[in-house]
Length: 243
Ligand SMILES: [Zn+2]
Image 1 (cartoon, helix red, strand yellow):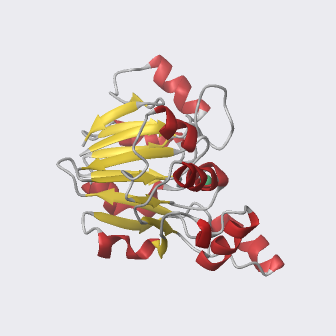
Image 2: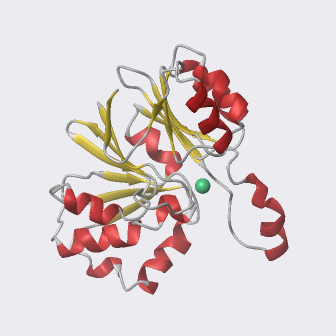
């Protein structure tokens, strides 16, 4: 299997960096993990056959991981995709479906079938992929209660049973919520912005291969500049990793 980090930026838009997205190849399957902008342009530049991507998996609804889905659907439509697309969403499927007509992407008019599934079903469809709920969105509890909004605060990490057991943390706050998956993983594609730099540093001292993506906490950047013996790989757009 192979991962290509097509977007290594964080939620703070940064010149020269795409927002979060990763291509996952497990032939004949090709998946897109997260859908940050400008993912449609990235795929157009890679000259992919638009029928090749089997499924898109969105780990949480922060816009740097999800908002590219609209232009991606538009790209698929314009390039005359015919294959059914499976779209796994973390929550609020009905609300998302309504947003499609807001953007004039009426599913009835798309040239391909769009099957929207809850991310909890991912493992049923693909037993080599598992979902782990993480704590990234839990700080919204108060505003959600106050506004009565329908957000479920679901944010997921993805465990991939590849030759090298791989954990894509996506965004996460405290690495504690991922302890057992981190123990199992040989390769970690890690959010290097949100978790405490000391906890990331401790992870870098283990035998695991760690790819730091989604930006770099400034304390972590300083520490790595002073000591580059950890073997940490700093992600960039286009980085390919055999897993
Ligand atoms: Zn996020």
